[in-house]
View 1 (tube, rainbow, N blue to C red):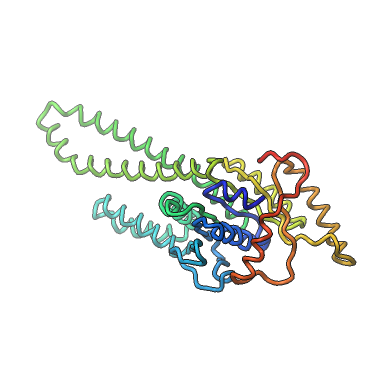
View 2 (spheres, rainbow, N blue to C red):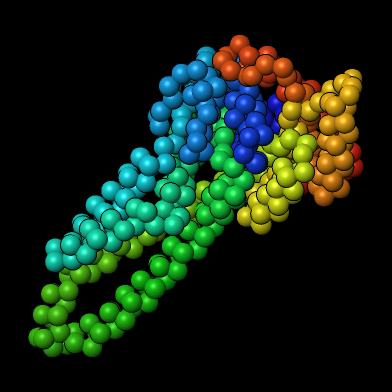
Length: 338
């Protein structure tokens, strides 16, 4: 079920509570697609990266080959924030008068550690990957951070687009007022001097508008891509325990508010029905928690992946694990996607 869904989308996000196996499931999906001859990019947005540990190699902020047909990269939050701040700083220095550069430096220094700066910088990198890097791949798979971080990140495109739109409207109102003031004096020599003196200011305002418009298009384009059901899908990974189930229900609600389409649940580390003793009791607890999940989210196809005895580390173990992804889903109730 999971592989069939993955083949039908270019962009997939894997999310869920920390420790449930998002990295393993997303990497196994990416590897399975690559083994089918589909060029795939695997991206980690989690500040606590695990891709390198999983593939037993160094992975950086630019795509590196992990297997034939599969590239991977890890978004470095600190480096991404630094690049984002430098870009903003350079633009402000270019746009603002020299006498304001000292204040700009103070503002930029404070903004490095401002709440939400890391999320905003990561979002910029995701937008860049979605807009540019995906052109060379049939599939781009994102291994995301734990639920709370991901929910905030997925809500940002709408918020940033709206915020930038508001700035553009305020700039347009200010520009109309400035044009009106200039028009009042346009018939006099003094008015001609005002217009001449204001030319650099007019150009500066025009450049600010262009920058804002570029950012508006970037975030609006990312929002449209993420909410395109034919292009993008979100998959929630969980284990059959009380807290991950509750968190999955909450994450589903938050993501739906942002317009994302949650097309599958993956219940990882399921116990076999043939176990006995203590494990049989744990299996019975899993069934109770899964009943809660299916009652809350009855319309989402759900695939179960059985608990394996060994850690999934390295290409060999990952390939063996990925073979399980072609199994049909197991879910009760409606089969209509959420």
